[in-house]
Image (tube, rainbow, N blue to C red):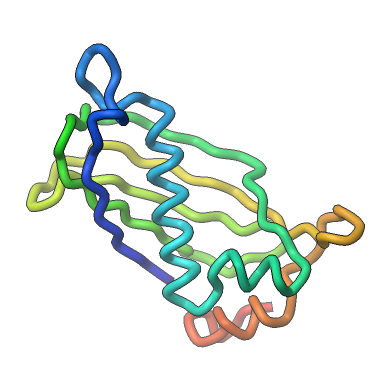
Length: 139
């Protein structure tokens, strides 16, 4: 399993009229976590794109548990729990820092797309090599 923890401070602009973090912001927080998870294992999005691939979101799910508020510091935990095959499944938990409060949880599902022909492709070799140390049995 690959795990990353990233802290995010809730900005005033992230909140709605009820003073809660606006529901759509959680997907942005997931994106920050996912980006940092990939960067941590040597696969920043820029490198993926330079190699000629895109990694779009095919599906996203968020379950809201508790509200988060302006100036809260949140911890976004991102997990790659299983070997990716054609799709890459990333799970998330968002917690209030220094607390066990689970604010939200969810997942995103991605697929590699060849930049030239815009067709879905298996994970490229450089991706497979980067995650092999975490999943020795991969592909």
